[in-house]
Length: 276
Ligand code: NAP
Image 1: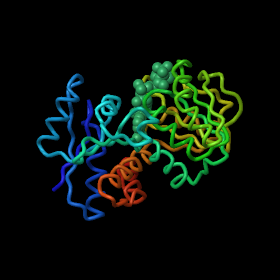
Image 2 (image 1 turned 120 degrees about the vertical axis):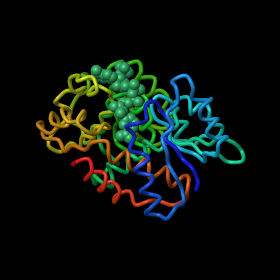
Image 3 (image 1 turned 90 degrees about the horizontal axis):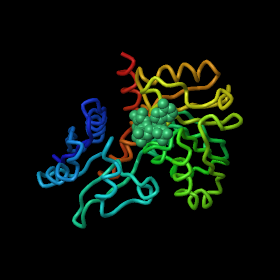
Image 4 (image 1 turned 30 degrees about the vertical axis):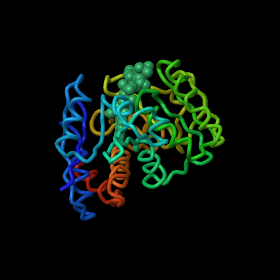
């Protein structure tokens, strides 16, 4: 059995082992997927010990995505854009790193929500690891305009500057903004902040959303509910982060195994479980 793991701190809450076990079952792949919680100052030591013990690859979650990026010797273009890795695997030539968060979000929006990003006006709220990590794949879809808003505007500007060439290549108007400085309504709004975790106010003005807006919150579960209820009460269609979670896992599984698992089926199963 090939061994994979989700590496983070904490990881007890992670749904990744259940998702990958189901992918393996449905595709007939012989693998196991475990949790590997490492001390906050022990990423390199812990991951190299796991490698020596036979780990084939895995996913990286908070707070190690930046360290994983620095550790990987071969990085995909989307990891370079994100400056972070959520997926790694070992080959004879060393450690390979990728980032599947952005493509996971894009697939959730375009396939599961059925909303086109090409030509759309998109607001991405949050320029932390999650926001920066998904920006490249969002730009690749060719929206007309993408506004990256953040509480700390300078952080949004840094991320925008890093993606300026990629935005030009895909003919997207990319701008940085403060949270409450965005103007007009958007076709798609993505909440990539940790504001709900702190019970803070919704991190955008009401004018940003309307009856035609799709709002995606990267969070899921009870913590995501107040923001979702607020967005719904202003006419938006709302999705939580479960679809992104399953789709980023599916892409990682594909990268490791060369087999694309049935993400829609597993998402429906996870959704049913969450409801109970
Ligand atoms: P992070 O790097 O710590 O960044 C936190 C972000 O939230 C920053 O943009 C920060 O703004 C903003 N923020 C924090 N408190 C705020 C408040 N009270 N009001 C407004 N903005 C606030 O965290 P992260 O890794 O980006 O994660 C963000 C969220 O995405 C988390 O809830 C995480 O669970 C979720 N996520 C979900 C998935 C998925 O697969 N569904 C994947 C990755 C992440 P400043 O820059 O001003 O501090």
